[in-house]
Structure formats: structure tokens, C-alpha cells
Length: 175
Image (cartoon, rainbow, N blue to C red; front, side, top):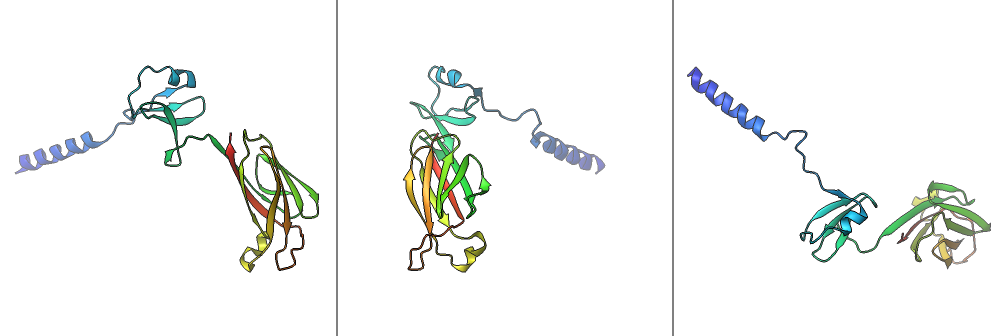
């Protein structure tokens, strides 16, 4: 009886130890530079590599290497700049941009490193402390380029009067 118990115990223990992954047996994705990646002769479709030049994961489609991002393949190399700006023109949150308050209710946002093309920019206006009080301010973009956006903020209670306002923004465009 004891022999059966010991045999059963050692068999179970052996199976447990076989099922455990050793720390040095983790699968690693090949790391290549841009030059190395583009010099691979006839890579297999579905191959993955980590590109050390731009720090992105790539998959080979059978005809080209495509970066993998946000759960899908992306053909555009995009960057994102986001920020929150106080009514007085000071930056509340965010990096990669500066703000100049040109006049009452007019703000100029300069991107520290310009986009290579015109970005898509969206704004959310209002007083940060009044967001739950149905703030109705509006932001109008009056100038947009790859390095700058100029906006005007105003109250939208039927009077359309310009007023200084807190706002947030997101700019997405080509690196």
C-alpha cells in the first residue's frame, strides 16, 4: 500500500515539475535593426520581429513588413500630442507643445516637434471645475498647420461672446 502511495506521489510530482516553465526557456522574438530587417531574404509570411531602430513590433505579410499597433496593423506612422490648457494660457497637463495666449480668448499652440503633415486636432472646451455643470463653451480652430494650431474660445449661451476658457486637445498626425 505504501509503495502504491509513493509511486503515485512521485508520478504526480514528476508531472508537476515537467509542466513548469524554466526561467531561461521563454520564447524570444528576433531583434533586428531597420537595415537587418530589410535585408532578410525571403522571410516567411507571418514572421514577427522587433525592430530596434524604431522600437516597434513588425509582421511580414508576404510582401512587406508592417508595424503592429493598437491590436491591428497600421500603415501610418503616427504620433499623438495631448494637453490641457488653463484659461490663462498656462499648460495644466501634457508635453510636446507650448501655448501662447495671443489675446482674450485666442490661444496659439506650437508643437515642439512639428508633424510631417497636417495633424487631426480635436478640442474639448470648458472650465475644468464646471464640467459637471453643463459648461457650454465652444472652441473654433482658426488656423492649423503641421507645427501650430490657433483657436478662439467663446461662450455659446446664445450670445456667442468670446471668453477665456480652459480646454483640452488631442492632435494626431504623421511623425
